[in-house]
Amino acid sequence: MSLEEQVMGKLKDAMKAKDEAALRGLRAIKAEIIKVKTEPGANGIVTTEGELKLLQKLVKQRKDSLTIFQQQNRADLAQKEIEEIEVIEKFMPAQLSPEVLEQTIAAIIAELGATSPQDMGKVMGAASKQLAGKADGKAIADTVKALLTK
Image (cartoon, rainbow, N blue to C red; front, top):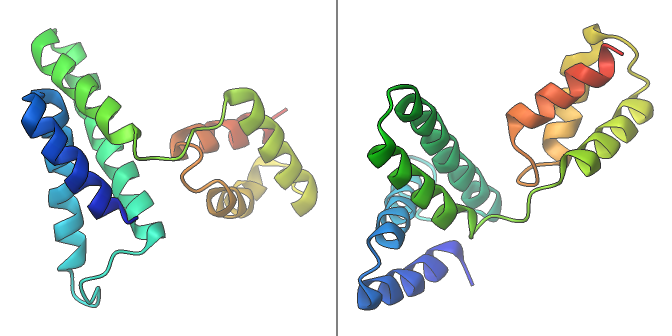
């Protein structure tokens, strides 16, 4: 079942339950799917990889907003962002724990023979491809940097 079909089913359920938080998150996903499907060259199709990227984009946007709202002491708006993040993350694959992430990146570094911070770009390329959807890009970058500067 595609992401769009899953979202539509959950959207109907949220409407029946009058769950405002779920509705906001699901509508955001639906809008992004429509946007991606109508982009030039998409031919009305969103690939599985494209679905994952759009979910990651939505979560990142909300986390950025959450940080700003928390800095401005806007608990009401921050709470809405938290609720939407929870809804969107339900459609994403499980995220790796920091320990597993570190082990996986250490294996990639060993495989590539990277030894210094100058190799970060090479490691990031391989790690980002291998860990797509399983870990946040910032977490991957921070872990790679920490392991290469040891």
